[in-house]
Length: 164
Image 1 (cartoon, rainbow, N blue to C red):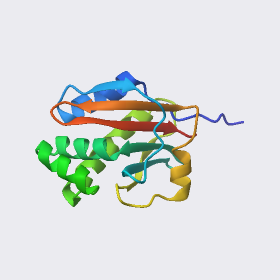
Image 2 (image 1 turned 30 degrees about the vertical axis):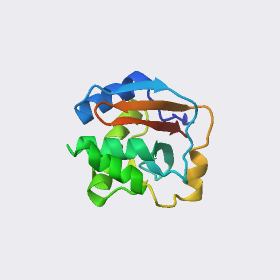
Image 3 (image 1 turned 90 degrees about the vertical axis):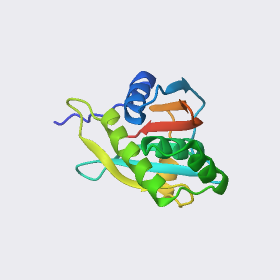
Image 4 (image 1 turned 90 degrees about the horizontal axis):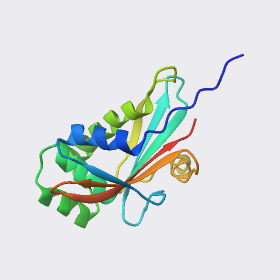
């Protein structure tokens, strides 16, 4: 008989340390109410699957954090992020940079004796997520909801939702 092993949901400390190292800035995090996405303001959705293509987790970022993280990792000026927020659209280079951030976030979802997960898709701000992915973002229980402040940029929201 096999035992079902769930993908771990990271702690706020783990998320802060990973983002601080990745963005090269002393990121701060604070627990927040559940963030399930805001299509009106703009949301990025990331899907993480195991080797059998089972969705194990989703990450959800608001427009602000999508722009700030995408700009910060690419050493872009804060003005580029502010323009993206004003236009509610991430330029291709910022989308690519944010994709790298989301890819590295997969490290938070992998633990010994758990199925390996990897980033399999990203729906950027302005795109329409698969309805199932949007529904996963509303899952209660195993989730981490944070307000993330990127120094010299600003504050946005991140949710990481464990599904299986």
